Image 1 (cartoon, rainbow, N blue to C red):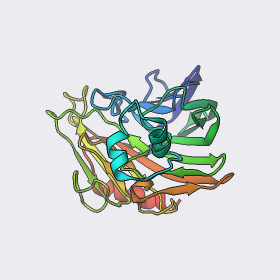
Image 2 (image 1 turned 30 degrees about the vertical axis):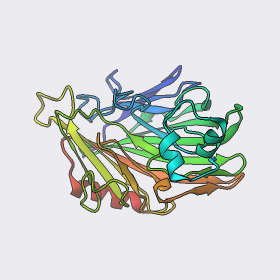
Image 3 (image 1 turned 180 degrees about the horizontal axis):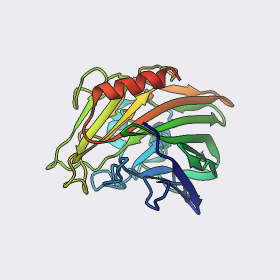
Amino acid sequence: MTASPFHLALKNDRIDICPVGTAKAIVSQHAAADHRPFLHPITAPDGMGEFTEYSPGHHPHQTGLYWGFTRINGSGDDAAVLKEWFYKKDKPAEIQRQVGRDFFHNPGENFWRRAAVDALETVGARVRWRTVYDLLDAGGESLLTETQTWSLQQHGPHLVLDLDWRGRAHGDVQVGAFAYGGLFLRMPFRPENGGRALNSEGADQPAAEGKKARWVGVEMPIPGREQSTQPLGSIAIMDHPDNPDHPTPWRVDAQLGVGPCRAIAGNWTIADGKTATFRHRLLVAGGGLDADAIEQSWQAFAQG
């Protein structure tokens, strides 16, 4: 099957990727100067329904598909302190130092500053773009410069999004142990509609929570697809074997939010001046999870 061509348009703080001959974006990259970058919406190749959700009521800080570390340069790992204080806004200064900087729950200007956004390949079977942001300390200085380089193409009935994430440390940067943080996907889950997660080892939620896997996929009914022959939508996220500590443990929460999280296994560090690199692939489909197709895509990704 010949891949459909796309065109990419950068305007102001947003990149829209559309099939050639249409004006409706199939993926949008948001890249404001004072807000973390994120992808929303992501749709299926047929364009029916939004597969990502921005600021749901149960997790208003979440923004479709995004990257956000949860604890940077915290001074302590006392589980009791974290349990009592992590989600409180009025932390004493000493407790805040123990917790560290939280970029997962804080997407705004006091934490993020755009350095660049670039359209790299604007027309073709594959399009590419890049965002560069500084993650800020409490004084507004950069702790870490992250570069996200994305590509989008179509493989048969699937959209394929590839991410190369690089974080360069300004001073030693410790990512503190926590149950989630890093790349994260929020789909439009509603408890009355149901849905499921599945990992490469055959585990569903809650058995997949915190467990290592090569990939995790999520399927659920998608608003706007009710009349389709495929009312479900699905997205699988893959962990590349070159990533640190592969296969990574995963967050798989009760509302089917998912993301690979190296910090589940413990603290890890990016030394001053060094760069950490992670590669991930997303397979997006109209219809439910197809474990064989996901595995086949992961095998191709792993060899690249």
